[in-house]
Amino acid sequence: MAFARLARRLEALGYPVAEVETREGRCALLVDRGGPARAAIVSAELARRVDGRLDGVLCALRSLAPSRQLVPLVFGTPTSVAARRRMRKAGIELALANPLDTHVLRFQLNRALASGGPLPPRLALRAPLEHTVEVRRRLRSRSVPVYTLSARGAFLLTDRPLAPGRRFWLEVPVGMIRPRTLARVVMANRPGASTDPTLPAGMAVAFEDLDGPSAAVINRLVEERLAGLAV
Image 1 (cartoon, rainbow, N blue to C red):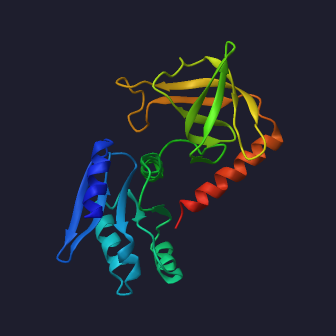
Image 2: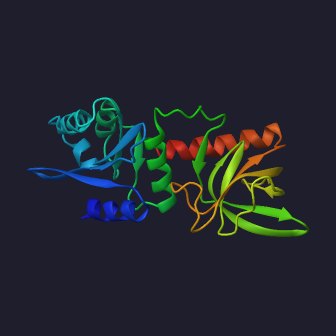
């Protein structure tokens, strides 16, 4: 039942999903957008088994398109160190906890589907965070929620993104400090006219003068968050 609900959520977000079943029932969700990689979501229940079925399922999914990369994710929380060890040995590094926030679901799927692609490596780690930042422009300020954050920029959630090239001051509350930087809009994703359908409505911004100590604090926050999204 949880797998079926997850499939419906993914389809609502625009991800093409195929349900893979064996005689024992549904065992995986295959997500394929035609890019360099496919994503396969398997249940944590498979990792709890010691009969090698996890390896067999992933091998069968890889054989469907041997020339393309398959990136597996686990849905649910494994309950033992041994289960986690089996998943990592099988090549599973990304986790989808249950219950699952929509932005985290989108972030993890996009990470998987971008694996092995032509994009250059990012200059800074980024992660989805339940955070808000303070946007200050023309003597006005407003709080804007964050989709992803890194020490070099952020993707801000808003139905009224500014046009690319616009600049504004931005404050990032992190614990007891509030790093402040000039930010420049590099991409706007407007509702109903998305530049990138894999992203929510909002705008991607680049930080232009974030100081070193503030960047280090954000990096540590991002690393801790990514560790929580891994197997």
